[in-house]
Amino acid sequence: MSDYARGLLITLTGVLILSPDVLLIRLADIPEWTLLVWRGAGMAGMIGLWLIVRRGRSAWAAFRSVGLAGFAIGLIYTIGNVSFLYSVNHTLAANTLFLLATMPVFSALIARFVMGQPVAARTCGTIGAVLFGVGLIAWGSAGGGQGDLPGDLAAVVTALSWAVIFTIAAHKKRLSMVPAMAIAGAVATLVALPLAPSLTMPAESVPYVALIALVITPGATALLSLGPRYLPAADVALIMLLEAVFGPLLVWLVLAEFPGGWTLAGGAVVLGALASSNLAGLRDHRRARAV
Image (cartoon, rainbow, N blue to C red; front, side, top):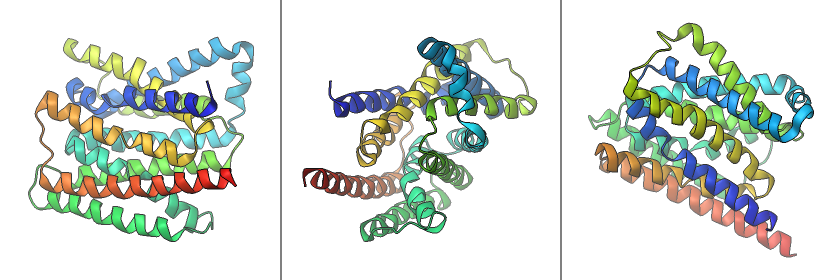
Protein backbone atom coordinates (compact mmCIF):
# COMPACT_ATOMS: atom_id res chain seq x y z
CA MET A 1 0.00 0.00 0.00
CA SER A 2 1.35 3.43 -0.94
CA ASP A 3 1.81 6.15 1.69
CA TYR A 4 -1.03 8.13 0.11
CA ALA A 5 -3.44 5.19 0.20
CA ARG A 6 -2.41 4.41 3.78
CA GLY A 7 -2.98 8.04 4.83
CA LEU A 8 -6.34 8.13 3.05
CA LEU A 9 -7.49 4.95 4.79
CA ILE A 10 -6.29 6.13 8.22
CA THR A 11 -7.86 9.60 7.96
CA LEU A 12 -11.16 8.41 6.48
CA THR A 13 -11.48 5.73 9.18
CA GLY A 14 -10.83 8.37 11.85
CA VAL A 15 -13.55 10.63 10.45
CA LEU A 16 -16.06 7.78 10.22
CA ILE A 17 -15.35 6.80 13.84
CA LEU A 18 -15.73 10.43 14.95
CA SER A 19 -18.96 11.15 13.08
CA PRO A 20 -21.40 9.67 15.70
CA ASP A 21 -19.69 11.60 18.53
CA VAL A 22 -22.20 14.46 18.77
CA LEU A 23 -25.17 12.08 18.53
CA LEU A 24 -23.81 9.88 21.35
CA ILE A 25 -23.12 12.92 23.56
CA ARG A 26 -26.76 13.96 23.12
CA LEU A 27 -27.99 10.45 23.87
CA ALA A 28 -25.76 10.13 26.96
CA ASP A 29 -27.30 13.32 28.39
CA ILE A 30 -24.97 13.74 31.39
CA PRO A 31 -23.23 16.89 32.76
CA GLU A 32 -20.34 18.26 30.66
CA TRP A 33 -17.72 17.91 33.41
CA THR A 34 -18.73 14.32 34.18
CA LEU A 35 -18.51 13.37 30.54
CA LEU A 36 -15.14 15.13 30.23
CA VAL A 37 -13.74 13.02 33.10
CA TRP A 38 -14.71 9.77 31.37
CA ARG A 39 -13.83 11.07 27.90
CA GLY A 40 -10.36 12.19 29.00
CA ALA A 41 -9.66 9.07 31.04
CA GLY A 42 -10.71 6.83 28.17
CA MET A 43 -8.50 8.68 25.71
CA ALA A 44 -5.48 8.65 28.05
CA GLY A 45 -5.94 4.99 28.95
CA MET A 46 -6.63 3.59 25.48
CA ILE A 47 -3.96 5.59 23.64
CA GLY A 48 -1.48 4.87 26.44
CA LEU A 49 -2.24 1.14 26.25
CA TRP A 50 -1.87 1.21 22.46
CA LEU A 51 1.55 2.88 22.76
CA ILE A 52 2.70 0.33 25.35
CA VAL A 53 1.59 -2.60 23.18
CA ARG A 54 3.14 -1.07 20.06
CA ARG A 55 6.40 0.30 21.50
CA GLY A 56 6.97 -1.73 24.64
CA ARG A 57 9.65 -0.27 26.88
CA SER A 58 10.18 2.72 24.58
CA ALA A 59 6.62 3.97 25.26
CA TRP A 60 7.76 5.94 28.31
CA ALA A 61 10.38 7.69 26.18
CA ALA A 62 7.64 8.69 23.74
CA PHE A 63 5.70 10.33 26.58
CA ARG A 64 8.77 12.16 27.88
CA SER A 65 9.63 13.42 24.38
CA VAL A 66 6.57 15.69 24.23
CA GLY A 67 7.95 17.95 26.98
CA LEU A 68 6.19 21.18 27.93
CA ALA A 69 4.54 21.38 24.51
CA GLY A 70 2.62 18.19 25.30
CA PHE A 71 1.30 19.60 28.56
CA ALA A 72 0.38 22.87 26.82
CA ILE A 73 -1.58 20.81 24.31
CA GLY A 74 -3.26 19.06 27.25
CA LEU A 75 -4.47 22.33 28.78
CA ILE A 76 -5.67 23.71 25.45
CA TYR A 77 -7.37 20.40 24.67
CA THR A 78 -9.25 20.67 27.99
CA ILE A 79 -10.51 24.15 27.10
CA GLY A 80 -11.56 22.93 23.66
CA ASN A 81 -13.36 19.92 25.09
CA VAL A 82 -15.30 21.90 27.68
CA SER A 83 -16.43 24.37 25.02
CA PHE A 84 -17.25 21.52 22.63
CA LEU A 85 -19.41 19.67 25.14
CA TYR A 86 -21.14 22.91 26.11
CA SER A 87 -21.83 23.68 22.46
CA VAL A 88 -23.23 20.20 21.74
CA ASN A 89 -25.64 20.51 24.68
CA HIS A 90 -26.75 24.10 24.01
CA THR A 91 -27.07 24.59 20.26
CA LEU A 92 -27.91 22.64 17.14
CA ALA A 93 -25.56 19.78 16.28
CA ALA A 94 -25.22 21.21 12.77
CA ASN A 95 -24.22 24.60 14.19
CA THR A 96 -21.51 22.99 16.32
CA LEU A 97 -20.01 20.93 13.51
CA PHE A 98 -20.24 23.61 10.81
CA LEU A 99 -18.51 26.09 13.13
CA LEU A 100 -15.85 23.52 14.07
CA ALA A 101 -15.04 23.29 10.36
CA THR A 102 -13.68 26.85 10.58
CA MET A 103 -10.51 25.55 12.27
CA PRO A 104 -8.37 26.05 9.10
CA VAL A 105 -9.34 29.74 9.14
CA PHE A 106 -7.98 30.15 12.66
CA SER A 107 -4.85 28.23 11.67
CA ALA A 108 -4.27 30.70 8.83
CA LEU A 109 -4.84 33.71 11.11
CA ILE A 110 -2.44 32.32 13.73
CA ALA A 111 0.15 31.67 11.02
CA ARG A 112 -0.14 35.28 9.85
CA PHE A 113 -0.41 37.24 13.07
CA VAL A 114 1.48 35.01 15.54
CA MET A 115 4.03 33.15 13.42
CA GLY A 116 4.54 36.01 10.94
CA GLN A 117 3.98 33.76 7.92
CA PRO A 118 2.48 35.17 4.69
CA VAL A 119 -1.11 34.25 3.84
CA ALA A 120 -2.02 33.65 0.22
CA ALA A 121 -4.70 35.73 -1.48
CA ARG A 122 -6.78 32.58 -1.95
CA THR A 123 -6.70 31.99 1.80
CA CYS A 124 -7.83 35.56 2.48
CA GLY A 125 -10.78 35.05 0.15
CA THR A 126 -11.61 31.77 1.89
CA ILE A 127 -11.53 33.49 5.29
CA GLY A 128 -13.95 36.16 4.06
CA ALA A 129 -16.37 33.57 2.69
CA VAL A 130 -16.18 31.45 5.86
CA LEU A 131 -16.84 34.48 8.06
CA PHE A 132 -19.90 35.25 5.94
CA GLY A 133 -21.15 31.69 6.44
CA VAL A 134 -20.52 31.89 10.17
CA GLY A 135 -22.46 35.16 10.19
CA LEU A 136 -25.45 33.43 8.60
CA ILE A 137 -25.40 30.71 11.27
CA ALA A 138 -25.11 33.29 14.07
CA TRP A 139 -27.88 35.38 12.53
CA GLY A 140 -30.18 32.37 12.56
CA SER A 141 -29.42 31.71 16.24
CA ALA A 142 -29.77 35.37 17.28
CA GLY A 143 -32.95 35.75 15.28
CA GLY A 144 -34.93 33.28 17.33
CA GLY A 145 -33.97 30.13 15.43
CA GLN A 146 -33.33 26.74 17.01
CA GLY A 147 -29.67 27.54 17.65
CA ASP A 148 -28.18 29.26 20.67
CA LEU A 149 -25.65 32.08 20.33
CA PRO A 150 -23.52 31.14 23.41
CA GLY A 151 -23.49 27.55 22.15
CA ASP A 152 -22.35 28.77 18.74
CA LEU A 153 -19.62 30.85 20.37
CA ALA A 154 -18.44 27.80 22.33
CA ALA A 155 -18.01 25.90 19.05
CA VAL A 156 -15.84 28.76 17.75
CA VAL A 157 -13.70 28.52 20.91
CA THR A 158 -13.26 24.80 20.21
CA ALA A 159 -12.19 25.47 16.62
CA LEU A 160 -9.67 28.05 17.87
CA SER A 161 -8.36 25.60 20.49
CA TRP A 162 -7.70 22.90 17.92
CA ALA A 163 -6.06 25.41 15.60
CA VAL A 164 -3.66 26.34 18.42
CA ILE A 165 -2.95 22.65 19.12
CA PHE A 166 -2.06 21.94 15.50
CA THR A 167 0.04 25.12 15.36
CA ILE A 168 2.06 23.89 18.35
CA ALA A 169 2.44 20.49 16.70
CA ALA A 170 3.56 22.09 13.42
CA HIS A 171 6.06 24.30 15.25
CA LYS A 172 7.41 21.30 17.18
CA LYS A 173 7.81 19.03 14.16
CA ARG A 174 9.54 16.32 16.19
CA LEU A 175 6.58 16.17 18.59
CA SER A 176 4.44 13.07 18.13
CA MET A 177 0.79 13.97 18.46
CA VAL A 178 -0.20 10.47 19.60
CA PRO A 179 1.47 10.48 23.06
CA ALA A 180 0.68 14.20 23.31
CA MET A 181 -3.04 13.42 22.99
CA ALA A 182 -2.78 10.72 25.68
CA ILE A 183 -1.30 13.37 27.98
CA ALA A 184 -4.06 15.76 26.89
CA GLY A 185 -6.66 13.21 27.98
CA ALA A 186 -4.98 12.81 31.37
CA VAL A 187 -4.84 16.59 31.91
CA ALA A 188 -8.51 16.93 30.93
CA THR A 189 -9.44 14.25 33.47
CA LEU A 190 -7.49 15.90 36.29
CA VAL A 191 -9.01 19.32 35.56
CA ALA A 192 -12.58 18.03 35.22
CA LEU A 193 -12.51 15.65 38.22
CA PRO A 194 -13.01 18.25 41.00
CA LEU A 195 -15.61 20.11 38.90
CA ALA A 196 -17.78 17.11 38.02
CA PRO A 197 -20.97 17.02 40.12
CA SER A 198 -20.78 13.21 40.13
CA LEU A 199 -19.04 10.38 38.29
CA THR A 200 -22.16 8.23 38.30
CA MET A 201 -24.72 8.21 35.52
CA PRO A 202 -28.05 6.58 34.66
CA ALA A 203 -27.78 3.00 33.45
CA GLU A 204 -29.11 3.96 30.01
CA SER A 205 -26.21 6.41 29.56
CA VAL A 206 -23.47 3.85 30.25
CA PRO A 207 -23.30 2.29 26.72
CA TYR A 208 -23.09 5.72 25.08
CA VAL A 209 -20.39 6.97 27.46
CA ALA A 210 -18.44 3.71 27.03
CA LEU A 211 -18.49 4.11 23.25
CA ILE A 212 -17.38 7.74 23.53
CA ALA A 213 -14.61 7.09 26.07
CA LEU A 214 -13.23 3.75 24.85
CA VAL A 215 -13.75 3.82 21.08
CA ILE A 216 -14.67 7.14 19.50
CA THR A 217 -12.46 9.65 21.34
CA PRO A 218 -9.21 7.61 21.52
CA GLY A 219 -9.69 5.87 18.17
CA ALA A 220 -10.54 8.96 16.14
CA THR A 221 -7.92 11.13 17.89
CA ALA A 222 -5.11 8.63 17.31
CA LEU A 223 -6.01 8.01 13.66
CA LEU A 224 -6.52 11.68 12.78
CA SER A 225 -3.19 12.58 14.38
CA LEU A 226 -1.46 9.96 12.18
CA GLY A 227 -3.10 10.99 8.90
CA PRO A 228 -0.96 14.12 8.26
CA ARG A 229 2.17 11.95 8.27
CA TYR A 230 1.10 10.40 4.97
CA LEU A 231 -1.19 12.98 3.35
CA PRO A 232 -0.82 16.64 2.36
CA ALA A 233 -2.59 19.03 4.74
CA ALA A 234 -5.18 19.92 2.08
CA ASP A 235 -6.19 16.27 1.70
CA VAL A 236 -6.58 15.81 5.46
CA ALA A 237 -8.66 19.00 5.75
CA LEU A 238 -10.93 17.90 2.90
CA ILE A 239 -11.58 14.49 4.44
CA MET A 240 -12.24 16.00 7.87
CA LEU A 241 -14.98 18.16 6.36
CA LEU A 242 -17.00 14.95 6.01
CA GLU A 243 -17.65 15.00 9.75
CA ALA A 244 -19.57 18.26 9.32
CA VAL A 245 -21.79 16.39 6.84
CA PHE A 246 -22.19 13.00 8.53
CA GLY A 247 -22.55 14.31 12.12
CA PRO A 248 -25.60 16.57 11.62
CA LEU A 249 -27.14 13.96 9.30
CA LEU A 250 -27.00 11.29 12.02
CA VAL A 251 -28.54 13.66 14.59
CA TRP A 252 -31.24 14.61 12.08
CA LEU A 253 -32.06 10.95 11.34
CA VAL A 254 -32.04 9.71 14.96
CA LEU A 255 -33.25 12.75 16.94
CA ALA A 256 -35.23 14.49 14.16
CA GLU A 257 -33.28 17.72 14.75
CA PHE A 258 -33.73 19.76 11.58
CA PRO A 259 -30.92 22.34 11.35
CA GLY A 260 -33.07 25.12 9.88
CA GLY A 261 -32.58 27.29 6.81
CA TRP A 262 -30.00 29.73 8.21
CA THR A 263 -27.77 26.93 9.50
CA LEU A 264 -27.95 25.00 6.22
CA ALA A 265 -27.19 28.14 4.21
CA GLY A 266 -24.30 29.16 6.44
CA GLY A 267 -22.95 25.62 6.57
CA ALA A 268 -23.07 25.34 2.79
CA VAL A 269 -21.05 28.57 2.47
CA VAL A 270 -18.48 27.43 5.08
CA LEU A 271 -18.02 23.92 3.67
CA GLY A 272 -18.07 25.13 0.07
CA ALA A 273 -15.42 27.79 0.69
CA LEU A 274 -13.15 25.42 2.61
CA ALA A 275 -13.58 22.60 0.09
CA SER A 276 -12.78 24.92 -2.83
CA SER A 277 -9.69 26.28 -1.09
CA ASN A 278 -8.45 22.81 -0.12
CA LEU A 279 -8.99 21.47 -3.65
CA ALA A 280 -6.99 24.40 -5.03
CA GLY A 281 -4.25 23.77 -2.48
CA LEU A 282 -4.17 20.07 -3.37
CA ARG A 283 -3.93 20.92 -7.08
CA ASP A 284 -1.00 23.27 -6.43
CA HIS A 285 0.72 20.62 -4.30
CA ARG A 286 0.45 18.00 -7.03
CA ARG A 287 1.70 20.42 -9.68
CA ALA A 288 4.70 21.26 -7.51
CA ARG A 289 5.52 17.56 -7.08
CA ALA A 290 5.21 16.96 -10.81
CA VAL A 291 7.81 19.65 -11.62
